[in-house]
Image (cartoon, rainbow, N blue to C red; front, side, top):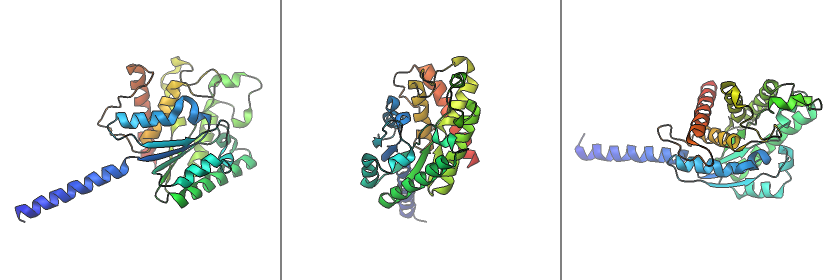
Amino acid sequence: MSRLTRFILILLLLSLRSHAVDSAIPQRILFIGNSYTGYNNLPYLVGEIIASNGSEKPQIKSSNPGGRTLENHLSIRETLTLIDEGNWHWVVIQGHSMEAAMSEINEVTRKSFMSSGRALAERIRKSSPKAQILFYQTWARHADYWKDQTADRSIGNSPNEMSERIRTWYDKQQEQCANSSVAPVGQAWTLFYQAHPEQAKELHIADNSHPSYQGSYLAALVIAHSMNALDEKQRISYRGKLSEPETKGLQDIAKKVSAERTKTR
């Protein structure tokens, strides 16, 4: 093989490698959800985390009116307009915080959750046939929620039970939708509380449901990992309002749960 031929082959390999890396970087991301997406501006956190890791900041748009279910989004004009805009690289779908857990025992909720997830995915495919769909697995209520005698038991009787239900039904969404995956955010929250029981309600705000800034930051990390948008060899420098020790702990949890999820796929 001549020196010129070897040089051409090297250039070709480098070009192919560069193209593969570039194609993996999310360029356009759409978020569909509710307050669990809107609190602390989760889409913004995802973009900052990706950019601080050395990649170009993606274009991000979202539709996240509070309290909405997946079925609600099928009739929300903003959601449908954004989906139909097309050319999305990733679309992140987050259901109501209770509907996945309630799907375990409530047939009406189950049919709504599953059929609406499928319908949203089908609509996304029409305008963005190459899009990757990422189901944003939510988390369980904090344990203090069940201290209230009026707590809604249709979502389970403990954080662990609720968490397992959520995991089960988001996994079923992935199974029914091609080119989709699950961001194991809820699993990351469970892992955090197991590893740091002394840190009480650090990820939740006072309502035992919505995320604190730390909770949203952890969710954003898991979502970015789930998009394969982070270079493990580079540092995530963005930490927003958090201290370096706080971000280090959350980054370790996100990396661990994402690696475990990858092994089980």
